[in-house]
Amino acid sequence: MDTKYINLAGILLAGGLLASCGGGSSSTTVSKAQLDPRVPITSVNQGAVVSTANNAAIQNMGGSSSLILNTAELALLKMEQQSAVAGSAGIPIKCKVSGTYSYDTDNTAKPGSNATYFNITYNNCIDVTGTTTDGTIKNTGVTHTTTPSNSITAEVDFINYTVTTKTNTIKINGGFNMSSTGIATNTRINTLKGKQLTLGVNTDNFVLEDFWFVDTYDNLATTPVPHNYRISYEVTTTNSTNHAKDFEFGFTTSQTISKLLANAYPHTGQFIVTGGKSTALLVTIVPGGTAGTSTGTLTIQLSTDNRVTWGKAVTTTWAKL
Image (cartoon, rainbow, N blue to C red):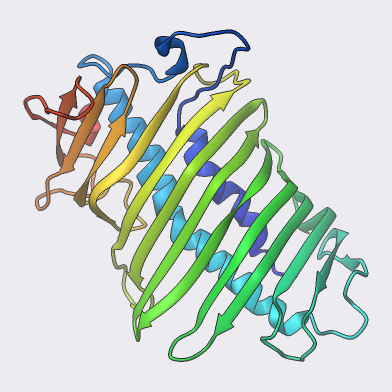
């Protein structure tokens, strides 16, 4: 069994854990203000908004997007080899510590690359002590090519996929389209796009909507190299005990963001965070100097007219937010 799928829950969840929240509905006529659950961004809270957006979108969601895609790619590639084991499809297979998993596929070769679907179901599966996995991951529409480079695409759906550790219970429902494509000898593009994922973390429930991530990087480098991100999504939270209710924010990169995976902060790029009542922030990372560290410089501009005009740039550092 490819245990990398277990990591996927935590990776997907990372952005939702740090993103604030939203929700709320009514069966009666509501005002425009009630229809906009986003909290307005002001000069008072803008620092906290930028810090949260970096944590949620860049450090976690963006920084993990390549790992999400690589994880899926590796699991699917392994699937093509192991799924052809005679008589194993649909039959419970023991996990490393305890519990079982089973799979279903149309792969007929051994090893092969002709599978178009691969479904794996976990039943109280423990591969690593302290981490239990349940639920199903379905991979359909799988395509895999090896020339001119190793590339794979699939539609991935999570059905009551649950990972339980000593401190957290993480549950995922929903799906996305994924692709991992080599466009040159040492260049790989990972793409993740979907309409909705529901992420449950203990008592918190997050909904990630209309999301996409594109990550381009040198996959053959022997030293750390920057990952270049394009990101967009909406995050809302409901039934939350640890985050403010009835809140959501939008995030999109207006310029490609470059970041080393080991760093908490990007070293170049620009992004926009949208709040309620036509407010938004334009955040520009200043390159050079201590960029990529907590003392790296950035500028923040506030808009109160739906991004028609931007206010005076305020220069600060990540540490001062």
